[in-house]
Image (cartoon, rainbow, N blue to C red; front, top):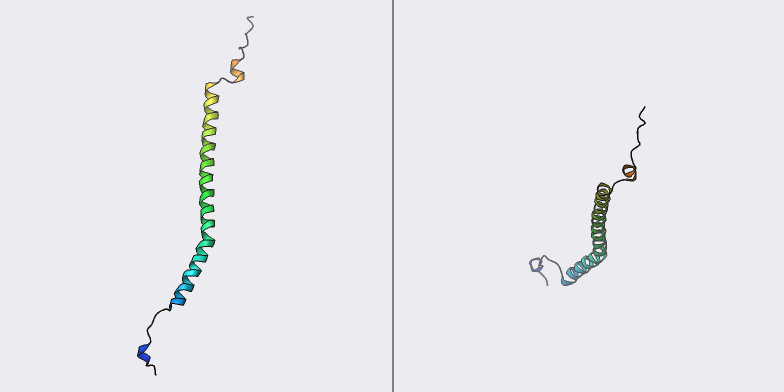
Amino acid sequence: MERADDHHAGFTLIEIMVVVTIIAILVTIALPTFLGARQRAQNRGTQAGLRNAFSAAKVSTRIRRPTRASTLPRPVSNPA
């Protein structure tokens, strides 16, 4: 005969193993998604940096190289 006091509150080994297995499956599903999002964010940051560098190079080139209009000779005024 079992007495009511002999029952211990807690989880069995099987219950703990099932929970651990479920958590492992969820991590396996979620981890690639998380890493992919992280990689996409890193790529966007790199693209933004390259865009900024390219824009700065274009501005620098415009400042250093005279434009076509500024290299034309000035019109001579007609003395009247």
